[in-house]
Length: 113
Length: 113
Image (cartoon, rainbow over all chains, first blue to last red; front, side):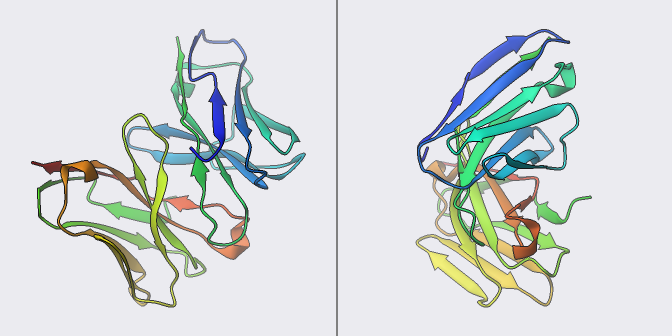
């Protein structure tokens, strides 16, 4: 998985609790992305980062925040988890030029009860 | 709003047959079109990609056909094998969109032995 790890890999939490997912890369790639994948919706971009402390919203950013204080780490926080945020979350990285491949991590399966 | 429309949603092919997945896009500024392959429990991985200055690109059994005037592109898998059973995603990217891919919803391919 191109030097990308995600933690935790599985998590069960309760509605209303905050949750933080971590993406760590060893490739020194500039761009990092958080996606969620749900049946019938494909891959939807939540937030992305184009450098340390440089982040922007994707198409489904409500209820999520991100931080990137180091090149290698990109954190996704669910402020107050809801059942609609039950999903599989993927982190991806790319070097950033046009046509550069996005490399995906193994995913985190999150269940919000 | 979905800017990349992918069809069919699911596809069943016999071993040795040809699998064809189609995508249509709306944004004429797109200038890079990748296909990603995803196996169950894994993150997507780049399979093959094309730029709009060519009409076809072939890598082994996988071919992308591109029709710029129709704003359509397709993935052909020749001599389909059971190991090709996966979900396939098409996407589009333009240089002015800060490296964000616009994804199709995916096609689940099953190749029967």
